[in-house]
Length: 123
Image (tube, rainbow, N blue to C red; front, side, top):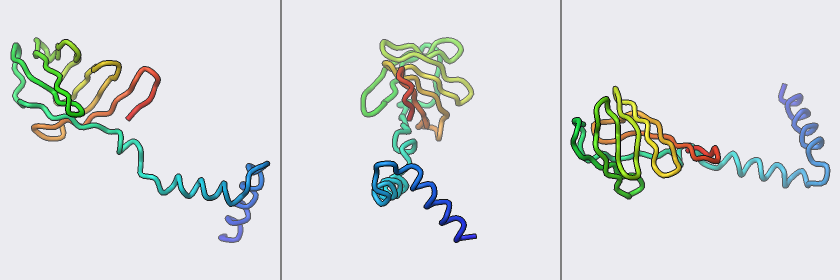
């Protein structure tokens, strides 16, 4: 079984290495495998100053160290000059600048978020 697997690997590398050195291709693949998962690195966490969100009150999200003040409107709507979205049942949907964020409260003070930008990049 191991011999068959090694035979398939050799066949694959010979097939994809038209002009490239086999060892260079393997080295790039091994270097890629050693890299940390980018999705974990790009995931963002935000801290909210207050946990009990009440309609009509002012709050501030800190995203990457930058404050984004907002008011909570009826139905959990988040409205600020550079932040909009909603917070309902622990789920968070936000638009900050050109990024859209989605996530859940991790605890009483933080929200685990993933983002998507207009180019389709995510994190």
